[in-house]
Length: 229
Image (cartoon, rainbow, N blue to C red; front, side):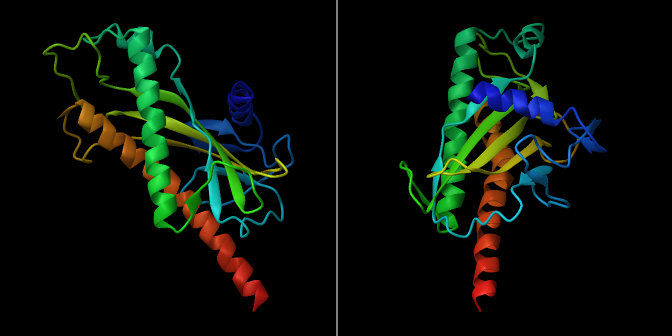
């Protein structure tokens, strides 16, 4: 299933009107193959498609599936040309850290917004299936680092691909895609990248995604409340 999601995300970025995404011109379809419609002028997420008339107001809990994580193509080969020598075990450890951090950040924001996490399907549960793709870590912590220091303006970048489902019917309600790049302190100066620095950069990149999910659920509730009045 996750492989299908990633293949679909690549397909999504290979069709209709030209817009700028992830720093390059690409074609974005107004409708996905499932019939979701492109939502215009989204503030926090670059690309969002939603089922016309979909209502998220009923969901009070979120079933957050562990994210799939994939590195940028040729990331290991390119990284090993420099000071860092990355092993397969290093890559698996980084993937695990990214998964855990993603769950931590989203859980914190959801609970802060008044939404409980669920591990079961129910009428009030929104099923969220995320994937982190094109993960690019500028200065990974590896078992061979030793005293090596890496200075960089950015800790790296990652792209979120996320799908929202009704947990009881498995109806696809929305999908989103967005790329984030760590900008450091925004000073343009090179910084010493460490494990803690990478973690903070990851939080900074992921938090807007979690906030966007909470905001979307809040807005759906508000619209529903106004319709009832």
